[in-house]
Image (cartoon, rainbow, N blue to C red; front, side):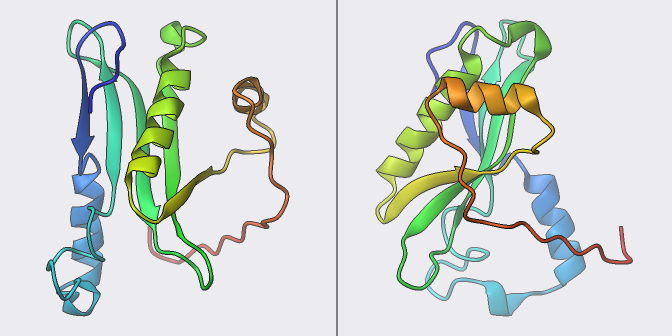
Length: 152
């Protein structure tokens, strides 16, 4: 899928392959997490994918890194947006909005995927205003917990 934006655009699945390799290094030979039918880590599609936007010089100027999450009991799959980035000089020009539109299309195209979810920091007024401008409401239903480990 390519985004209709200035410059060369492309979608790259497995953009976070370095992260996957790090995960494999930590997990070792984690055969128990391989999907029985496809042999893929945690099933298909890949653990992580990204939509990338490149400028005319081939530099990445925007990205949306995402994963599909397994459904909870009584629910359906979701697309979880991990990171949304647009180069400072291209913000407020529609790049982020087009990435969000494309994410919704990717989620809609996956059977059983009913939603796109993401988080932003409460102290990030720029991101909160951006999402509000797209008509997205903040959802107060979840509390985020984080536990740090001793390994970095």
